[in-house]
Length: 423
Image 1 (tube, one colour):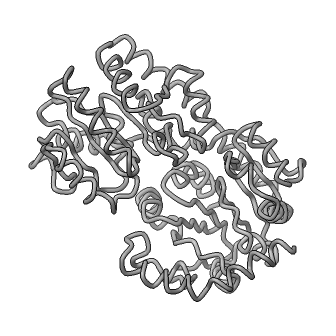
Image 2: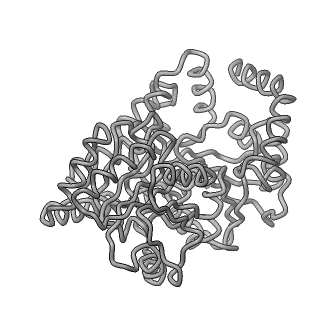
């Protein structure tokens, strides 16, 4: 309890400064523009009765939660489902996937009075938090209202596992309020217990993102993107979810690849699409002919050496038709991004050494032969040249990647069983 009090004292003390920050961000930051009312829990759409509230912070978590949300809609038809997210990318995934079948909204800031307003609006009968969304006030407020709390698809990063005493004390307090904790692996289970979770509450259910990757892609959309990106038949490499510092590396990789494959094109999809103008300028400064995805279409296809992606919700489609797939956030210290996305499309995943946030996916793909880690841009270039040049290797790795995803599916059913035990 003392740690929760310290947390709230810090939040309240910082509130005036945070208000200024949020006011500026609402004008200048695409992430916050037009979303602030909901982030302060002023919601237009509210459920008629007690809802199942699922929180999936961003695109990856929203995709991972999709099979569970479908199970809730199919098996609990009389119960409204509220799904909150923190990012606009996550919101787009929810709206494109479920439309009006759910109430999709932005997650409220964890100030006590804001959370209280959100709980009054949604009246949750149960709260499901995905992965590492461990927010003290929302957990405490839901338990106070009588709603059980589940953490599903939980994972514990190296950074989280090595937190100091004060933060560990806060984790221990929050875990004590949770009813059930479903984690991805045995390692996550042990780490969760060391952080203070009661062993009887911790269950290993596997990684729900494997299930989330199994949704079918629309053939019409695949054909549209193929005619947009490679109407001339030129192969392309995708650098997905990149961060500052990685785009420069990818430009060097492209130079080396084009020595062997002159017609090769590269698609760079920055993790945060608001950075696309900066990435565009960076590529032009390198002397390349560059296209912007939003300015291309089947009638006006891309023709440059590089396409900078500035739209949301199309990355998996790109992976499915790419000649090779690199997943960013991994050559710099960001912890990596979802390497299961290309794997589920039947494409091998290539990534850097900084994959702390996706250890389970890395272990599964590397054990199955469907993923490969590279140390730097030079090794990435050499590895991609071998992969593109050898059809036997490419087919073997691609088939292995898809098989890994298929063989690891099923976690969502186990998660649903944990949910049913509480409602």
